Length: 75
Image 1 (spheres, rainbow, N blue to C red):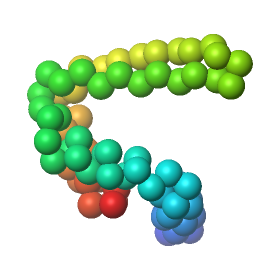
Image 2: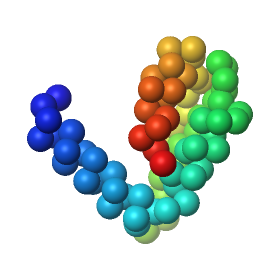
Image 3: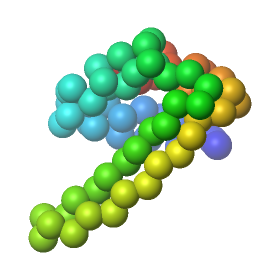
């Protein structure tokens, strides 16, 4: 990833955090608390029309290591 893409990503994340201020706090709480090997993360998306899709994943140690690297970027 080049420097320009990283700067754009940083700006986009700042806008996202401004639009959804509770979400980074949620991520921080999750990363500092209940996430451990074997934890299940579920994501559900509901469209304005009410259609939903859901998925989940069981975290592995390598996933947690990746999230640990990202941790300081979330807040």
